[in-house]
Image 1: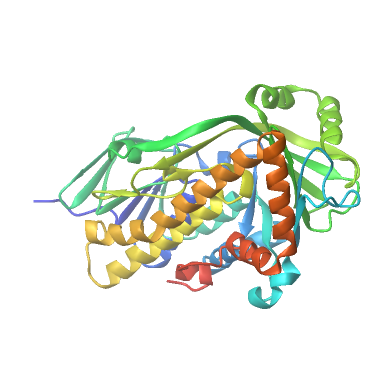
Image 2: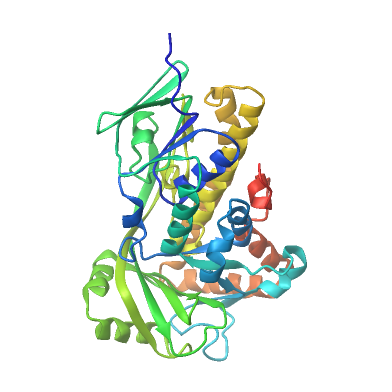
Amino acid sequence: MTPPHTHDVIVAGAGLAGATFALAAASGGLRVALIDPQPFPVQLAETFDGRSTAVAWSTFRMLDALGLGERLRPHACRMDRILVTDGRRPGAASKAPSPAYLRFDAEEVGDATGGEPLGYMVENRRIRAALAEVIAASAIDLLAPAAVDTVETSGAVAVVTLKDGRVLSAPLVVGAEGRNSVVRKAAGIDTLGWGYGQSGVVATVRLDRDHGNVAHEYFLPHGPFAILPLTEQRASLVWTETTRAAEALRDCSDAAFRSHLMRRFGEFVGQARPEGPRFVYSLSLELATRFTAPRAALIGDAAHGVHPVAGQGLNMGLKDTAALAEVLIEAARLGEDIGSETVLDRYARWRRFDTVALAAGFDGFVRLFSNDIAPVRLARDLGMAAVNRIAPLRKAFMGEAGGATGDLPRLLRGERV
């Protein structure tokens, strides 16, 4: 006889996707256990994760619905315009623009979005802090620090044994622990992918001039270089280089880093002064061959890790959380077994095509722009110039980036499940 379940859902990984999913599932009445090897206070430190996230406006509606928005708004910087430039010259705002640039402006789609920006730039540590505060006030069973040792699925139960000997059981276990997901490996789900031979240098800088809520992305032969607006006249840098060059930039002095920075991007945003630590993240593509297995489901980087070229990685993961939470909550209300193949297949079908299409698009974009072959550069410059002149096409790109296209889960429409 199967013993009673300790929970309805066990979530391995309390990162941004895992913690948000736990909140979404608990808001629908599911009993949730959330497990992470790191204590929450460690995850809130400035040195834990130096990245910032471009949160799509539809994703921000989800954060509002879960009670996170009011905590994040003081730390969220609107992105009202995005300027994308190709070639070796500085960004599109620095001089008379060449034809090889793209300009996306929130005002163009304001009627459709209700005046929302193209997105909001928020430091990851601020999102983590908001999640920690809301989770602490919820009914979620938070186990951190705690590490998953084994995951076993058979019949109607998923059994998770922790390294300290505790045993949890539920109809479903969710893998949200990133690219080295224990749940994914235990479920026998393979991955496809490759490295780009690139790493991203991430740093925060303070600017002499107001950035005007404008994001700049400048394509260099080694990869994209972005200055993304933050609150308090600061910006987040995402600087793609070869791994060796990226590590050198991380380890060099502030003066040397600043010198390299100003040579790369010019002075159209004034002098940029580094603040805080610098981080280096290896860049690769990794896709799980399946999103589900018996009694198991994957979300976030456990299911897909993509290049940050379009800033959509976390938005993809949060769309997973919204879709999976909605499927499970509705199934539970109908009295269905939420870990059954029938229920999990609804989630997999909802997210599979969108994920693969976006990942393939980002990969093609990286390969198209991360080189300096003259014929390729000419072709992409002509393409950028053409897109820039076709307003409906620009609006379509902005709608996709805002996460407002396709079959949206209710949370991404700002509705509670």
